[in-house]
Amino acid sequence: MANRVLIVNGPNLNMLGSREPEIYGKETLADLQALCEKTAKTLGISVDFRQSNTEGELVGWIQEAGKAHQGILINAAAYTHTSVAIMDALLSVSVPIIEVHLSNIFKREEFRHHSYVSPAAKGVICGLGAHGYVLALEAMAKLLEPR
Ligand code: CA2
Image (cartoon, rainbow, N blue to C red; front, side, top):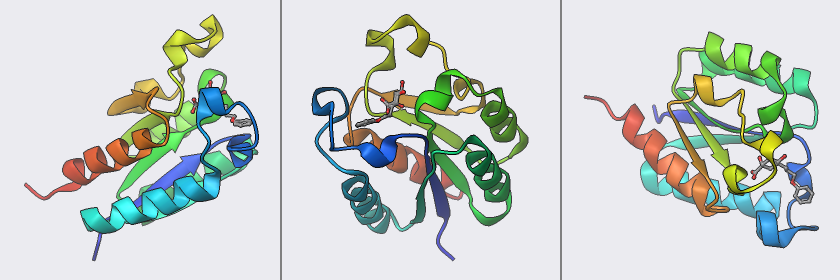
């Protein structure tokens, strides 16, 4: 069976495309989902694309991913910089994790420079907009290749 990757998107990412296109790009969340699904197909993997504005729901999905998915790609949005709960959940699962951000968080305000996701992540991609999700999926497919 094809490897299944959980793509977790955090708060306010449902608003993508509606404002701040200079920071986050002009794609909507639905565009991002379509891009990930198309990319996954070419890589021979499947994706389970989700978004929530609720910290507890994100934590629940991460806990479940340990059982139903072979990898996690996560853009925790603002929770990246605040959530010990999300970090603990990510540290508790054994599948590979890749952190993604649309914007370059290191070029922005100081409070965005720290990530609670990074200690649990195999790698981080930021600043490349929607294409960052494509690159993250390619990297994940590579990590999941049998060797
Ligand atoms: O660059 C990223 O992907 C972020 O994870 C996006 C978060 C931000 O808090 C992080 O520091 C970096 C914000 C997501 C909110 O996205 C919106 C997009 C359009 C309109 C409103 C919100």
